[in-house]
Length: 326
Image (cartoon, rainbow, N blue to C red):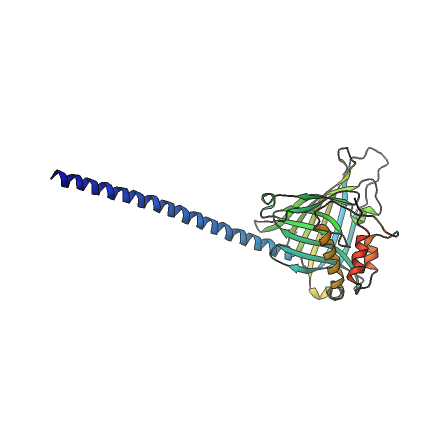
């Protein structure tokens, strides 16, 4: 009887241990399932968020009646003779061409239409997802290369803005925000003087731009709060003045921009060669310093005067002539 009693106790002990083991493994399995489910949920949410980002970026493509508005708000000039920039308000018709549409890269070319048929190649904007390579404007036609970590740009889009000749201008990274029916992206970064200023002002050499791109019911808005900065080596930046920018892009029928669409079809190959050449320069991951002019002409003047069927060799040679060796 004692033997049977001890045997029963042994069976009870074994069963208890088996039950505990099963409970432990079930908990582990549940945790794995929860973690897997959470990861899948997070991945789905991330993909959905990225899709919204892409849609907002591409919403800036198409034909627009644009109104450019800039006004200097105040200044810190120590010289009483300082003259603020005049208020600038001008309208234009602009076509934004979707040049490249990939999962992690969207390229858009702006084309101004003057007098219904005259096309002026305007600025270009590239949007890169979780980009880590940057060319930050320093001053005096110099851009400093900077490498960020993957963690610093997770979920963010870099907006890279280029001059009319596709040389670098400014760039910054930030997260697209979609909340309360609003879709917008905002970033602050240094840039060269805008075209409206560099031909008439030489009392500052850097513009710190706070850019807001917001999708609206009429199209989109490019809002700016800019610092006009004097930057000298070995000295702190001095904010000479500030200005407000408010550029509205009102969507109109694509047919109104047909002249620009036709122009791009005729000139696309030329500018693709230009973009590819600049990409090779950027892939060096080194600081860039450009010459202001060659043969008394800026880069855009050289490129704009070349035939659309110019050879790759000739186009690249012109760009190379403007890249200053360190």
